[in-house]
Length: 181
Image 1 (cartoon, rainbow, N blue to C red):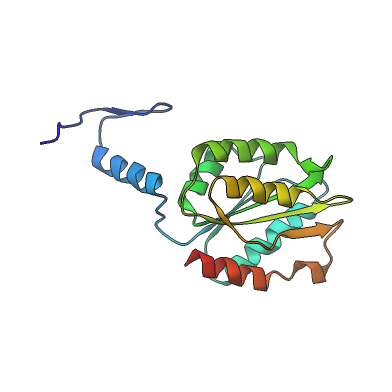
Image 2 (cartoon, rainbow, N blue to C red):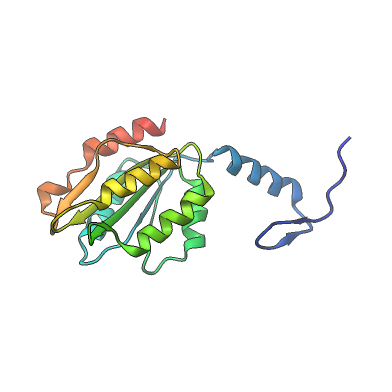
C-alpha cells in the first residue's frame, strides 16, 4: 500500500500539514490541464490605452455570453495571481502594443514565465495595437503555440486608436467559445 503523507512541501511556497488529499487533487488537475469551469483570462499591457481598450471590449463580449472573465493589466498585476488564473482558465487571451517591432517588455516577461509552466489544454487569442509594424500579436501567437496553446488563426491587430468598427469581436469570440468546448 501507499505510505501516509504527513507533510507535503512544495519547491516554492508553503509546507502543508493538513488538507493533503485536496492539495494532491488540485496538483493532479493542474498537471493534466483540467479546469473546473469554462473561464477566460485576459492578460495585457498598454502603452497609450489602445490595447487596454481592446482587452475591455473582449472581456465585455465574453461576459455577455455568460462566461467568467478575469482581466489583468501587467503594469499593476502580481504575476503569481495572473499565473494562478492561467492555470484555472480554459482560454487565455494575451495582448501587447508593438514596441520597436516586438513585444512590450512586461508582456514578453509574462510570456516567458507562462512558457516555463507549460499550461495544458488551453485555447487562446493573440491581440494588440500598433502604429507602424504590428508584430506584437504575431509574436504572442508564436510563443503561445510553442507552449501548445491552441491559438486561433485570427489575430486581433488594430492600428493606432481603435475605432468602434474595429471593436466588433463577436465572430472571433464565437470561434473561441467553440474551441473551448
